[in-house]
Image 1: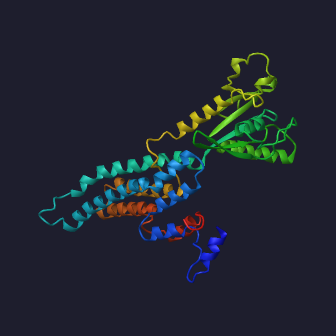
Image 2 (image 1 turned 90 degrees about the vertical axis):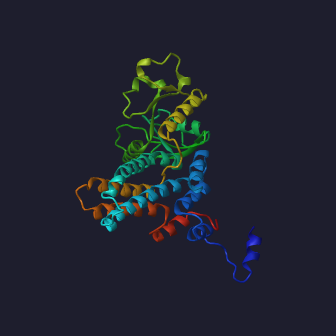
Length: 350
């Protein structure tokens, strides 16, 4: 490949393509819009099947058609308002023709808000479902992470407090991306370094989509009530001789050494991510850029709906501003500042 590129570079006027140059040309010539370009970038970076499906939905124009459909409804609504404003004295323009559109605007706002409610599902599918392992020192968190990842990710020793920083790894379970975080053991300590690790652990746990409260079944006398909402995972099942007390409310029993319960735990993780991404279609926003524009559009629509006592010109302006925000999503206007960042995500060419 290097020899081929070197030979081609020897021709007059030939040069290596810049990152994302082909896609940028397609965008500038109207062959792709900005949402499709972002979808293509996500498709090139996809690691799991669900990431690929979400990206393909955007790259193929399915999400763009949703946004464009909303914009077209706003164009029609604005034309009705303009008709009343400009031709109200004409005999063939009935009075209050704009009254017909407000019910449609209310339904449109509901659709925009519905898309916004699916943002977190889109982010999870695109970026991964965050799972934090929480518990006391030596509860078996690091061993459980290694067992789920099926490789040595975290250091495992019998010394309490071995994990002092957040250790992260990625899992692919049935096409869904999971980000698994092993955190420092939670306890009171005078060690400055360990205290910082615990502070980071608490932040990671609070930011997680799901917390696995790991409980050492071989040290039941040291078990207190779970501090964080989530699944209570009993670890070190292989070291337990008697049945586990039901009053402990353990959701699942596992052994990182023998592999017992790991498949059942993966099934629970899969159930959790599916319940968090239960959407009818994958044509949903998955980037904060989309969310910001949609929230702004929704606010302008609400302002138009609330402004019953306002002059019709002001309500029309709110609709115009809403349509501008939707146009910014697909890149019809005001995109120059975004282009460099977006196309820099591509590899050379593409």
